[in-house]
Length: 355
Ligand SMILES: Cc1cc2nc3c(=O)[nH]c(=O)nc-3n(C[C@H](O)[C@H](O)[C@H](O)COP(=O)(O)OP(=O)(O)OC[C@H]3O[C@@H](n4cnc5c(N)ncnc54)[C@H](O)[C@@H]3O)c2cc1C
Image (cartoon, rainbow, N blue to C red; front, side):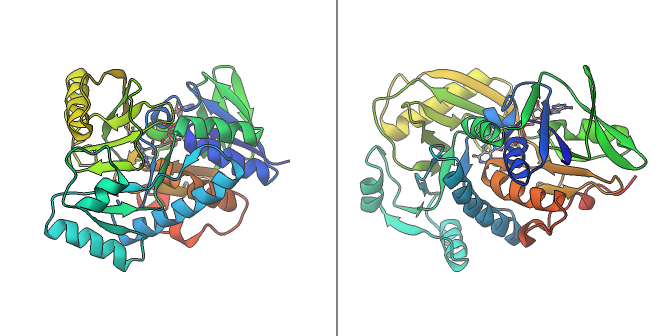
């Protein structure tokens, strides 16, 4: 049986392990920490294509949403088809987004203020107009990571930093503090740890520094329906009543916000959320910092590492939205099949010229 080692037991490694195990591969994951201990455990978990950076990126995200539906049928109970209520200041930018998405065939409803209130009565000051994206939703990425790992039957070695072994120009396993693990193929699903794994091979993967801050509140006494994506704040509710929200304003921008005072950022986010929902005394139970794994041009990197046989790479932001399609595509490629066309524009070779 072909042996595959995946470095990284976040959501990407876990969903890939599931796909590869179901293709009959013997899969071992090695993680320096615990499964979902990095970005996948501190992520907003929104699955969407209303945000995208290019046409190819939009197509990939749409395919990612469809792949999540397939995954949800195999791992029931984790996905939440909440829809998303999105708005920004009324005007040209709002109209342009609505037209762009509608022209691309993206499911949406354009809502008036009365329809917004009907959709989400908890909003204290609804905007004049909003878009509702009925096919968007969320997962708890840590829960999905655990579910995928359990269903995969793969073995997980936690608390072990790995380094790639190369013999004769081919990846042949990993070195760990407990000794080597031999493999026929190796996958780097190590998030922000990918550059350090590639550097000893003479490969320099550029990354953007995109720190994020997420807060989880104490449970609140109201029930939100959709994800709320307002210009000043994104927000959703967990099943247990807790609110989850990015704590850094402008977190989707190039700057990532000022994280020098995380508690002040969290308090400011709670104040914004309180105003949106008419809640006072909101408290953060947890404030979580994590660096987003964002390759140097901002777009996903998925595929074969150039110049090293049997070595594969997946590094990406929006890795929750894209986990299922990336896992399907990489599993196909590792098995010698063609990757889905939507992944073709994102090869590692565009950022990693062979050493
Ligand atoms: C605040 C925040 C909000 C986000 N919101 C969203 C969202 O709403 N929607 C969305 O689609 N995406 C979102 N993302 C992005 C998404 O969470 C990530 O793209 C995704 O979790 C990446 O998963 P991963 O498995 O590649 O990386 P990770 O979850 O970081 O896992 C990588 C693993 O590799 C391990 N590792 C690293 N180096 C080594 C080594 N040398 N040896 C062994 N193990 C190693 C680490 O310990 C880690 O467990 C968000 C991210 C953040 C931080």
